[in-house]
Length: 364
Image (cartoon, rainbow, N blue to C red; front, side, top):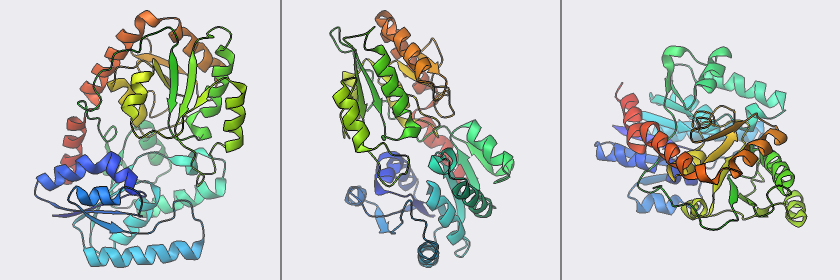
């Protein structure tokens, strides 16, 4: 079969879906990768895949521009005529599903997270997205990463239960993210790895760090990630500068080698408002790091409180500070929590298990 994998960035395809593409190729399928151009297109080609360019503005709202993009995508699907198109992220799901109707292509849609369209305050944008989802998801298989997202889409009547599948994430390479020894010394580092967005709980993390300065003067807190200026939820550079000058935390920026980040960290914290299934937390848990995260969809599935980490209510900086304080006072439990998290990832979220579940969908 000819299979098309379509995402909103080449970075996403390379970092999250390359193993799927390789597994499909090994099974004898022809795989085409489709995305806007970026820094990882050449890497996809060097891995032996045909990569096609499609210019897609992630946050453009110009109606004429969007209609033009959809028309161009329809022509591309007619040209390629894939047997199956697997779409990731919101615009590929919406536009790819519509374009596939003109090429006789079977569609698998992956809901990898709801994004600021659902978590933000723009009601008009949300209503528009709901209408488009309802149209696009008809007669397609829809893969969700957590049960809460599936329940939301069913409640909004965006899809029907028989069309849905639940596959938790894209899978973690347990060899790449093997258990790491805890860093030596008495100055623990707590990191928040992720895009610097309000919905990632960055402001709550900063507030918690400021509250804990007195009780944990040697503890360090760091934001590891970059701003996303195309996202209206992005943290401003002025806020980052102010927080650094305040001395409560460090801003490391984007890091290519996340394994090195986990090696330096004693605790990984992601107080996100909502995730599909947090890749960051899965990598951290596989690396044997204790976790503090929010009691939110896509986060709570990874942590068993008191076993491999702690949960705090969404958007509650005081509660987050209390959870971090509790864990910082228990260094003797960090290794136990970390190894429990490693076992949880191996049992439920390994790359092999997730690939097998995904390939089963292709064979339906």
